[in-house]
Amino acid sequence: MVESMIGWLIPFMSSNPHLAVLITIMGVSRTVFKPACALIQTYVDSTPSVIDNEKWKKIQEGKYFKALAYGMDFFLSIKLPVK
Image (cartoon, rainbow, N blue to C red):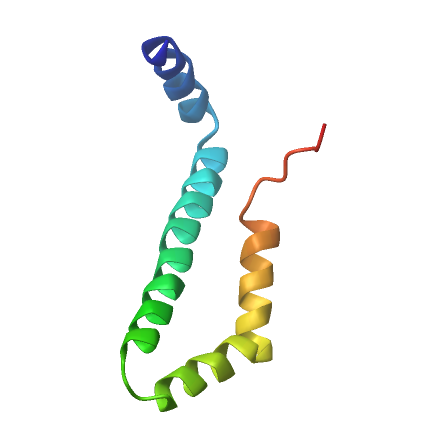
């Protein structure tokens, strides 16, 4: 089954390079952004200092971070219809 999908997918992506780039950007950005935020959260939670927790919370509550997170969620994810 996988081989048949690959046999169809590679020629399709070769004939649609812009779509291939878009899918790659979507995948890579979501693969990097969410784990990076989780890693930072884990780090600040593991340190004994509460100053870094407050700084990370301030960054997360900032309008630029919220705009970035919303934009990535809106533009870089595929919304499937609810059945």
